[in-house]
Image 1 (cartoon, rainbow, N blue to C red):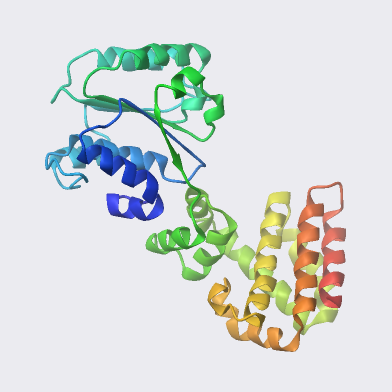
Image 2 (cartoon, rainbow, N blue to C red):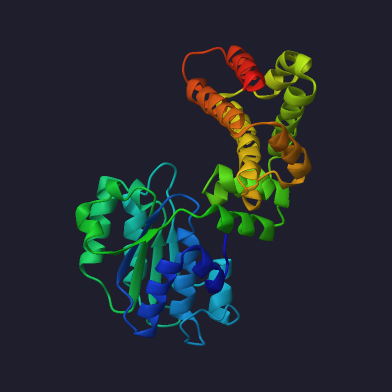
Length: 329
């Protein structure tokens, strides 16, 4: 995920602008609630806020090089505390320990900041303890609560926080971030269209099975259009032994869908939207040899297979039926 203020501004411009304005005016709230889907940068933004709060350069953005910024990056600043769930929940004892710590004077300054990750996983007792804490805010103390499910938090907690909503990331943003993390551009292009969760995309990129899945899908496409008589054998001999689980099968269908969408994109003049750039010449040839209606029917066939995947159908039968639909178009 983004590590600097500038990088985070590109991913979450609205949130970072609001925080920057508050810092410039010296009007940071006592409590924030960062809400949004997993992988949207909530924890990274909270850590950047902590750096700005403690940065020795006293600018609107953290310098990233002073002692305080460096120690926050390494998790070693004594006045910045991060609370994570203990097992499946955040317990009352964790909040009480935090309160006890914050009742003391800051070890190096009068300022303190705490971050509660997965705040929606607090037990009822923990939530009530936190509420009392929020009701009596201390000067120069900032609370940052992170959640993917704000509806699970007490309304009274939400009402005491400034809520900042983190938007799902655009495919272009995810693709750029993946490439920056040294993910192959071919893999990054697929992952950025498969999920808007950057953390999930990074995890998949490090899974050898994902790259192999891509190769299997490309091979199926080649068999379908170059060796039609071998398609059913390929499904039985190669596809089914590899794509065993439902979620893995869905991943394969997603990638197959991207291929046919790429063909349609070429036909309508949107070549800049192509995901499988390394197959461009092959897909362009297919686009010239087929009609838009036929490619649209092939896209609809894959979508229908995805829809039926989680119903009570035989997976091999589903794929064999899809092969028929794709070959007929």
